[in-house]
Image (tube, rainbow, N blue to C red; front, side, top):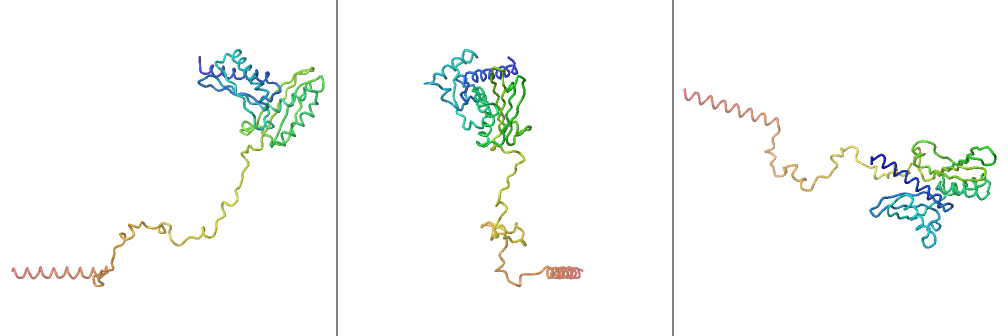
Amino acid sequence: MPVKKHFVNRGLQHTLIEEYLASELDNSGYAGCSLQKTPMGTRITIKTSRPGIVIGRRGAKVKELTDAVKEKFNINVPTIDVETVENPELNAQIQAERIAYAIQKGQNYRRATYSIIRRIMRAGARGVEVHISGKVTSQRARSQVFRAGVISKCGTPADEGVSRGVCHLTLKSGVLGIRVKIMPESYQLPDEVEILEGIFDRSAEEKKTDEGVDPFYQDELPEDEDEEIFEDTSDVDEASIITADEKEVVDEEEILNDLEEESDDLDVDE
């Protein structure tokens, strides 16, 4: 099987399993699932806000789902784990199902939507957007949008920082589509800059330095090299210390003496 086809089949299988679990776990706070291959088989992790309903009495519901997934999707040795969503108010899929459940029970769609939006904003969301499309109040289908706060529409913040959820509801008048987008306040936008105070504040002692001396010469010398760099001249006689000018005079006198001695020797030989 080509590699491309393998990944396509794997994604299709994941989508079908997710749709099946969403239909079976209706009104149980289902927030999606993830598949992971293990040496022992395939692990399916179900995210939900109401794990008691998903597990069932003595695990009966989980066993039923495991057998159904094994038969329908031909998965060898599937194991289902249930994970509880920490903050369900900021999960878009759970909130979309709550709006659908409220409308199905006969509550007005505006009242149900505004109630959920207020709950989401109190939970710490930066912005919320809800789309409801279909035959909401009349025989003609239309789309209604509810917004609160600020939410990113494009770029990396829209891809990484926005949670999306979709839910469909079947009524006598037709099918309603509900889309929810939630952006949490904890997500940091790229244009937000936080300036820390106190970094550039230094005490007077730290600023006090010897500006007239090169920092290279301020370093301490090693203990072994302190006495070897400069020669000890304490025992030298003052008479033995000759300056450069005096040395040149002494050299010239020695050269003249040598020349006189050589001329005397030549006279004697002749």
